[in-house]
Length: 365
Ligand SMILES: [Mg+2]
Image (cartoon, rainbow, N blue to C red; front, side):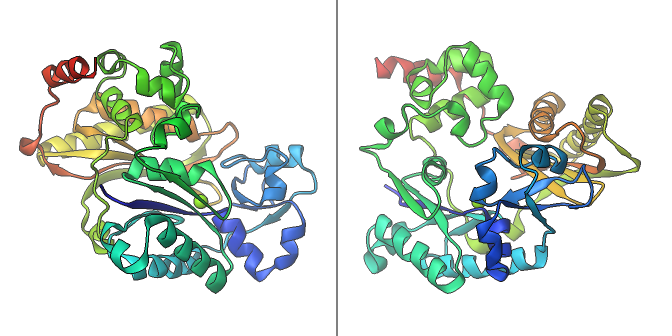
């Protein structure tokens, strides 16, 4: 049994801003692309702002409607990068298996560290306290036996909290959570699942895997496995991230675009280029990503894990879903990008075996 942590810095950008300006703790505040432009985007907010229903990414215009007194602060990316590195240095004291997932999230495999530092919970606690004491930042930690459940755990209680989802307790603790809380389950997938009568992670766990595959394709098998604690994805070593190959294509528009249909077309063109390059170079990838950059240089990057693919249909489906989930009316888009990473040579691909799915179902009865 592995011991995996997912560590998530709470309200990261906003928290870093409040380190240098503690008075911001007393007011609803948000970090936004360009505070002077109505179409600027909210990148992060403190808890006082969250109480007004402000979310990310939302336009400044819509946030100010909810909370006219909202204090807006410009982002200081160099500071966020600096603190992100410092925090990951703390993680690396406890294990060399630290996989940076985003600027404020990392996975840690602490299986080998238990003899030195204590139980997984104790390790999580030590890390959490060290970061708080050294840098004044809080984290939420999910502790589990695989990445997907660790990630889910870190979302269940925040800020400054630890949630343990172990083999004995993960089912009852997650049964009533909405399926959308599971990683890589976006708006579209949530809607499809709802139509099938699957609303909670418990529903998903109890659902028929074969039926899910029928409706959702390979993703159906993945999320069914995840709900049942089946996720063998290893936590990479810190340095591995930089060796990862990806193929991506982006475009900067001569004039900013805010039209959904036009942007969708542009995304499909890029997807076509990317899938062509993948096939030409005989690669398949299992992480699909998009970038949306706004007129005021706010960059939104989102990624999705899938089965290995280089097919236009598979990739475009995910790209459009990511776009749909993250584009908000009013956004002025200057640049977009489509990428596929987690590459391996396509001849090495393992086929999904439908017969083994049937066997799985039989064994469960
Ligand atoms: Mg965070």
